[in-house]
Structure formats: structure tokens, C-alpha cells
Length: 169
Image (cartoon, rainbow, N blue to C red):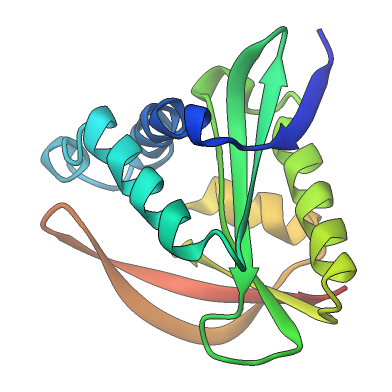
């Protein structure tokens, strides 16, 4: 019943997409309308990850978490989206809804921070939905602090504000 982490392969990406969609619905349904979360479909999300990893694979890294051979989470990291060469960006940590509170997210975060250090970055950043209080608490417990930077994202037809968090490595 222990969690294991490994690099994602192309064979994982459709399952990663389906997991990502389930994670989004579970995490965001308390503050986003159901119609905003209805798209993309799990298959479309899998195709999104297949394409994204194909384009970004040279400088990004996806790690999957498995419990008893079942995919239960993933992380995705790469260079900073604002161009700071000393900063890595944690693009995503998503979990199966029933994995929340079991240490999987923490294992993925620790692994991602170690990978960023190994790449020579001295700082890590991420974007989190402002209304996602659970994720914000998770990151704050992990040593992240809000930088004060904000931007808007779109999920379905809903415009959702994001906050940038950062921490030293």
C-alpha cells in the first residue's frame, strides 16, 4: 500500500488526462459551476497531455504516482513561465480524489522540488487558483508563499483568478 513514483511514459498520458479531469472536478466543484468543469472530456485531456509532453518533453518532467499498480497522481514541472533562469515552475500536481490526505501530493511535491534543485534552479514557483483554499493550504504547509502576483485563467467559460506562489530551493 505504499506509494511509488516514476517518470511518466507516453503510455501513461491518456490515463493522466482522465485523472487530471477527475481531479479538477473534485477540487474545483465547490467554486466553479458544473458546466465549466464538463470540458474537456477525459479523452480530450489525455490528448492535451500527449501533445504537451511531445512539445515540452525536452525541458519538462512528468512524474506519476502509483499505489498498488494504480495511477493515483502526477506532477509536471519545467522552466519558469516568466523567463527567470534561476526558477523552475511546478505546473501541476493532481491526485485521484480518494488520494487526498494520504501523503501522495506531498511525495510528488518533495520529488518535484528535488528535481528542480537537481536542474540547478534556486527558486520554485507555481500558480494556484485563488479560490482553491485546500491547494493553497497544501502549498503553504510545504513552504510556499504568495508573491502578490495574479493572473486570470479560463476554465470552461469561467474566468478564474490565479495567485503565484514561490519558495527557495
